[in-house]
Amino acid sequence: MAGRFAPRPTRTTVRGGHVGVPSGVPRPAPAPGSRRTWTSDGPLDLGLVLGPLRRGPGDPTFRTTPDGSVWRASRTPAGPGTLRVALRGGVAHGEAWGPGAGWLLEQLPEMLGSLDDPSAFEPRHRIVAAARHRRPGLRLTRTGLVLEALIPSVLEQKVTTDEAYRAWRLLVRKFGEPAPGPAPERMYVMPAPRTWALIPSWEWHRAGVDNKRASTILRAVRVAARLEEAVRFSPEAAQQRLELVSGVGPWTSAEVVQRSHGAADSVTVGDLHLPGIVGYALAGDRDADDSVMLSLLAPYAGQRHRAARLILLSGRTPARRAPRMPRGDIGKL
Image 1 (tube, rainbow, N blue to C red):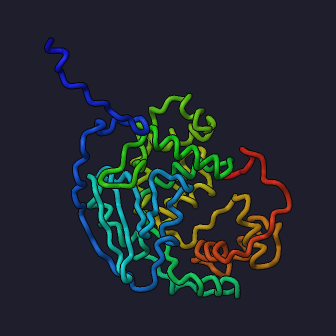
Image 2 (cartoon, rainbow, N blue to C red):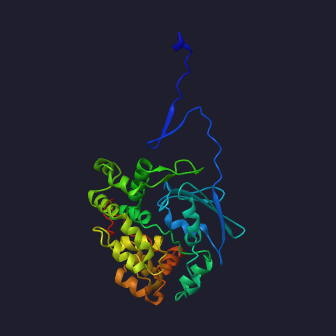
Image 3 (tube, rainbow, N blue to C red):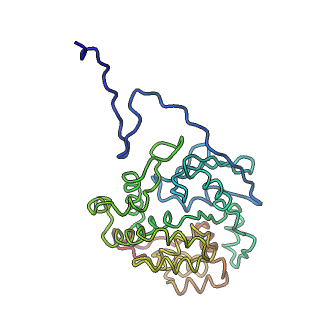
């Protein structure tokens, strides 16, 4: 008889492979996070500054909410953390949760471009000058996190961006952990290096990641600590260390240090589209290759990445003359 009156067990929900709060149990109000404010010495556009950290519209580690706030979930040297950044009256307000909260808030000014010096840039072309005038809030972010930039960059090698974004989204949601604090729904911190190393081969396959890219990531996470040390190096020295990992070439290393170091001069070479975009914008040459692109960007020595960003923001790109390249045929290393 006692069994008839026993309370029914609560049903546990599973979200993205992680056990959640039992259904029917009220969620406690989220505790306030640690906070910090920072005022830039010039215009600041959160979308332009932090946009390169977003890997597609469904990136589980990045979210922009209707109030204009930017949320990031990161694996920091102190552990996982969630950061919310909002601009109010020209002041950046940061709030963070989780073991990595303090680290994220300490890094906040650099992430918003405090070490970047836009005044050092001198436009040499009318189109670049116009783009700079229209986008005064562009600053180059410096996250201080190498692996966070490296893994998604490796996933983008030799495939379309849609394929790479899908792989990142699936792998982070399945093997990462829910973002700490009151983060928007379905936000996750990327897996720890050991977790990446233990992902079964069939899960890479399900995510559409070929053996070459998966093997590169596995080699990288085995030396994760050595790669993270490179954040203390110059961008050039950091690229050299990254390229010691088999499968990481100049394209990938440049994509990493642009984000981890705020590298104003690291140009992405080996890209399918960028040389043609730069060539078309600066010289009307839609068939430009890397050598032509580097020649056109030579007047911007020390600021070539910023110049390329402004060219991309100008909107002056050549019209497509042929169907998109088939999936799996875009070459990047």
